[in-house]
Length: 490
Figure 1 (cartoon, rainbow, N blue to C red):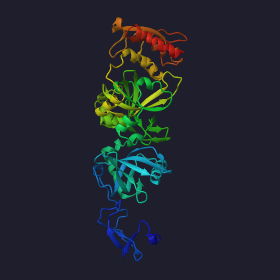
Figure 2 (cartoon, helix red, strand yellow):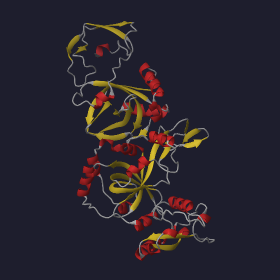
Figure 3 (cartoon, helix red, strand yellow):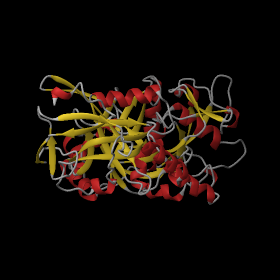
Figure 4 (spheres, one colour):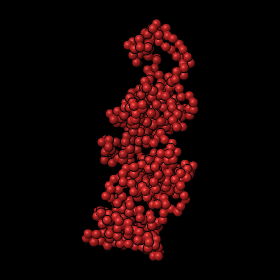
């Protein structure tokens, strides 16, 4: 073939004469034809004009056919889809040589199926550079001559070393036709360009039973540096004071700020006319050691709820849902036990709560949960009671504490407090089960400034804010709270 490299240019049509023919028995087959042709010294190559021959000759294989493939991974396939997710560039060394890849997620239009696609080396850099140089609301990709691979039970595609071709929003009929069908379909509003987690290559068993480091909630609260752990908790409530979804940038998934009639992304430094609705659900979780707030984002929330955030939001609005509440579907998290892979991110070690805990993966398979409990000898015990829930209120961020107090307390109005059980106020609580402490909250919170402090229940002083804090339980619980506050002050 090297004899003809200077005589053949891609995109031209040639007539070939005097070729060799053999069985098509290569490791990866560009076509499923029984035979393949070989050039030899006597081969004649003649340039011709023939517009009837297609320039690229795509033969797209449906996603469902690839995903259902069980044995024939030797053929090379052409795939076409819109990018709905992108992972980070992964760098590692193999036999001393540097290697790079990025995982993207492609979705078709008709079936809504998604296909994992791994781009290696130059193909990865080409894709990432295109995203950087050509910001767009959607990216339609063709990967020609891709090889199929079954990785841990899931079939995906990747480029070959030399033969694959990658087209991104190219001006070719196949991509232009796909873009037109995409705009006219119902799925246009549902394109979610999400950040894929790096855990995608691990099974749930590997993630939680083999590689994860287990910590209880109490242990998580002792962490002093950014870390990743696995834990097992029961969801007790959905924290409705926080929005359950947000307007996200299609490119980077960061929250967008409304700027006139446009939406601004400070990371991309770009204004957009549209946005993607993504989940951001705050779960109140509990184990036998403490309570905590975990933040659950889009990918894992969608996997559990089986409905994209934009669809749930549209349905909720159509039903006249209260914007200050959340759809009833989200309550399906409540009173369920999950395995969580969590990221503990330290923000300010001087604050009452120096961290944010977010969920990067969750598992709700009973057999894996049972194996986890057996491995760490976790027995069914009574969950922590209300008095400990109150204590955990003082381990949350000062902003959360400030918001709770400012919206829940009014002078002269008997309103429910976030520190009391649902439906209870101080006036209808049995005096035998409530203890009231006067807490110097300004000093306790590091002299934090509160929004509209005059609305807080209690006495106002020139230098202090005295707030009445309800403690459920006996005198021992009240003493425990005093001890926590004293330790925080010191």
